[in-house]
Image 1 (tube, rainbow, N blue to C red):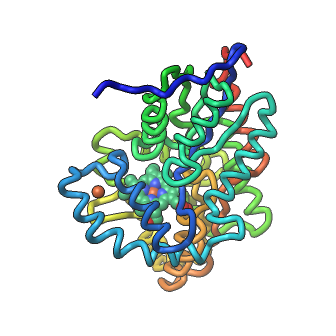
Image 2: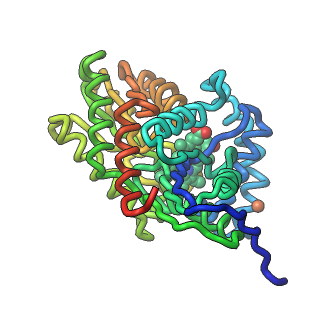
Image 3: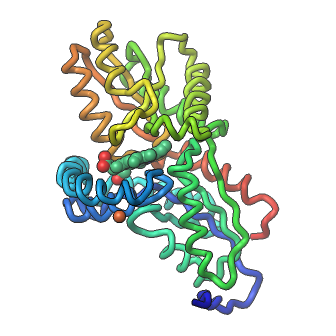
Length: 336
Ligand SMILES: C=CC1=C(C)c2cc3[nH]c(cc4nc(cc5[nH]c(cc1n2)c(C)c5CCC(=O)O)C(CCC(=O)O)=C4C)c(C)c3C=C
Ligand SMILES: [Fe+2]
Ligand SMILES: [Fe+2]
């Protein structure tokens, strides 16, 4: 079959630069059918599940999608907002605030899985005459399963274009001073309001340990970020911990696990734990439900007291300023 490429729209003038923010994505509705569609797309990504399709597809279609969709839909329903899924609602607010901070360029939001999809947003930008593109995945720490997958989606779409744009990609910003300032300020604001808990837990989304052995820098970037934040906050060893949450499937994931650590802290007599999740740019199922509800219950049940979840940066001014400055740095040298 001979290749076909999409015709390039004809535009007068030098073309323009755009910033594309990309987050993970979320179901369109908190229903089993919508969750099944979302998980089906997500869990077919080879970057997320690195197993042979011969092995994985029967498990996914035969076990995981039928058994998981209903339960996960109920979890989504418990955090759903009038504006839809928190992940999408907060991402939209962040993108709107970024547009305000970068008034001279179009700032658009796409989701790696679900809607608005990366192809639909890229095609709209192409139709507007975009010729230079900065892709900023909303993942502070690089993982092949998240950041690289965003680049895959962009590359798959523009592989069909006759005229591809100049392209830049932010692989991670885990050590960016502006982003660290914003997370530090978020934690201090929580302490100003509620006082300090007995411990501060930095909880990051987990990954299979196999990914780390294969060279994924994610755990090292989580460690570097947590250590830098603990130092900025003046915390001594023993006053803070780094843990990994959201384990999926049966193989070994990064450790220590957030839930097991909370049980252990409760057994040691720790009464109040503050939990911050610096890997999540905006609040979502994994923070609002898994941490603030499920893990709070696990901690209480094991004899602990209060788990105080420190919300994500969302569309806070410090977050917007940090990401806008990061984008400006990556845009340097391009006309606009
Ligand atoms: C199969 C394994 C998964 C890997 C690897 C993984 C990595 C990973 N995920 C995030 C961020 C988010 N994940 C979210 C939900 C979620 N994650 C997985 C599985 C893996 N994630 C599943 C199956 C789900 C859906 C919920 C469920 O079925 O339990 C979310 C929240 C989405 C929302 O709609 O709110 C985020 C955000 C990162 C950062 C990461 C690797 C570092
Ligand atoms: Fe399949
Ligand atoms: Fe995930």
